[in-house]
Image (cartoon, rainbow, N blue to C red):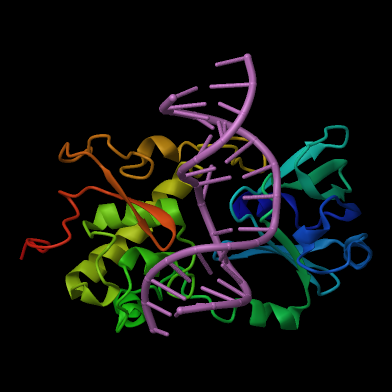
Length: 270
DNA sequence: CTATAAACCTGCTGGC
DNA sequence: TGCCAGCAGGTTTATA
């Protein structure tokens, strides 16, 4: 998403803005949002965890989060989307639509100073060099909550959601219910590698689409067919054949293979 | 600190 | 076919 927009938006001017669902702005009055964004040229595109960053020439920054159902899609001016919440008319005639059926997504406009506060508590980027086993271990130390809950916590590491947390734990052979601080040094190293491999596979496949998630060109991702446990409850594990199980952790569903991710006993082969 | 529930919302699926 | 329960990619806030 940020990669696609980085090819498309820098240098483009936003010639019109339409706010269809004001709460998407997170509290800013639509009139102020429209006034501060209309006429602005996009300076650069960035990303921090699940947040998309759009820097404007004025110094203001748009920060977008898709939450559960948000999409950002290029549409022609005459197309209309029943789930459009904020629409940006561009100087090439296209419209970039923040489309979000469930209305949980956010499109915030913040000053450069406020950006720091917004991201102050976020953990490391899992694909950057500083996401080392030691770093992950330090952030799990002393925590007795389930490792699955810790991986969903964006102050531990950013970017993992319910799908990729389950998939990373499967890849690492770690049961999602294990207390975070109980992981051995080797398990933490395996988990770090598994998180990276899981995310890289997802990116390579254009993301996981099982509903209406799409990229900016309205294309579905193909990662669904590569998932090992997520949404495979009762189906045989691709590795050992045991049925995948589902439990609830931190109010979210967690999927795992009881044989490949044992909770107790021979959980480490060494 | 940790856990849990609820809130924010609409749409889809499966069972009866 | 129709209705209803349950679930869904996330995060914040309140409560215990």
